[in-house]
Image (cartoon, rainbow, N blue to C red; front, top):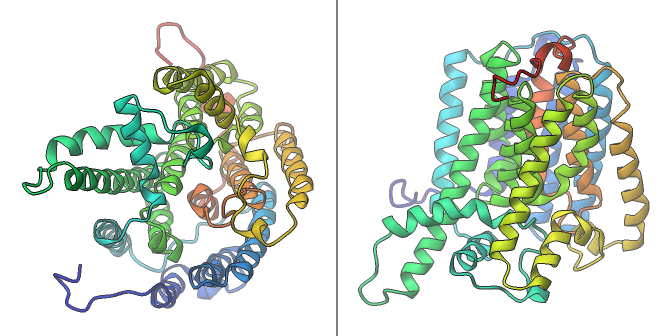
Length: 429
């Protein structure tokens, strides 16, 4: 970027100021000052100081700040199903201006991925994917993917094969430099494609399920505008699960497809498995068997991939436990909030989380698309409170669903019995 715009540099603090002012100018409803929409916007902006504190080394205070704001939104999301009055509050910007703003932000963020520096954690999945292609096995006790599901490196394979055919070899150092270039290009390509899928999914939900494409565009533009997205654009383990969950919601009328996408998301970070009580409760009256089949098929496919990519039985069993969240329950190497607090307090937090997930199978009794959005976001947000690896930072897992919840209209009529078609054997799904 600096080769085109000389001395161009946007510091995180500067972007917090700019994006906060733009958020207020585009979305704040000045004629309805005491609306819930305005309170939500203030809450979204309140995440920024916590991210800045973590970025600048004040991690203990930063994580406490993020947990406090996350607690507010957890209550907000759990209360959302009882908010039946959903007036349409359009952005202050016209549809054309909003589309241009979203497209411009997307281009700048993708340029940020290309020109930005990748950390070692950004390349973990790429290197593991290369080991899978070469049938090489990393030492189990030193695995770099302790915080990811075994399906995480598989999402790099497509971009890895493509980049190997495109990236040219270097004359002086044909092996080392080319391998580094391929790894960098693979990580960047995967992040860009995941962001594109996420944005398209949010717009599609607005168009097909909210009956208002401007609402989906407004939610997607706000996602691109937030400081979190600008600071962590290249983090594939943030955006890939988010994109899969968004498309799971977009495909809710097709239980098999929704189940497959949810199962794939669980293979990346394992935590979407806790969404099963909620989604099974939604499909209880129609579509439960098809949804369950989709989830089981996706998980079976991931387990089968472990059979072919694991070099030993020990490695296979470790990754299998990892897929079903067992390793995430262990203390391990704590980072983030729990690094500065007594890890034993994770146990009651985890117990409350499991109770919350189980209760969503029964409450609310009449589940609709709005319930799926808000409660799915609530579950993924609640994982941050006991996530051992920098819990609170992984906002991408719930942020798109949170934004869609904020902008959604009344969706009480979008229930499974009417939205999901009856099972017919002559149809594929």
